[in-house]
Image (cartoon, rainbow, N blue to C red; front, side, top):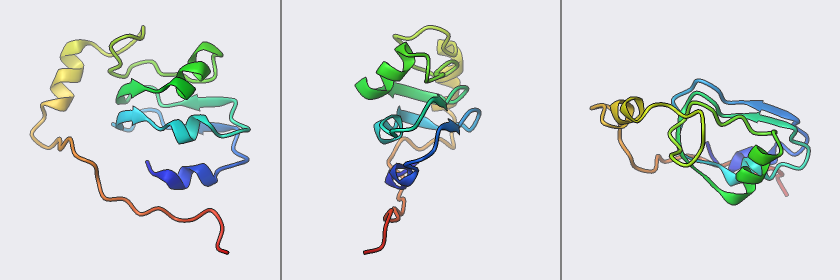
Length: 104
């Protein structure tokens, strides 16, 4: 996921469930002003920042079945370990291209 997601100013619902995403749930997505429902559930995210945590407590962010140690309803330690130790897993930042929201 990249910064271009911040261009989705009017989006109300986003479903990123079941995609094998990992890393941190992007704070930029949790800051979208019209967002009422975000579901990155059933992935392998390992961290949630403060903005996204506020959405969890307001029941707007479904973070179940990830690998976030301090949250309930996560994948098992064994399941997370299996994913991150897979030979094809590369824990580095992927090169992504960001597109501007507006062309000025």
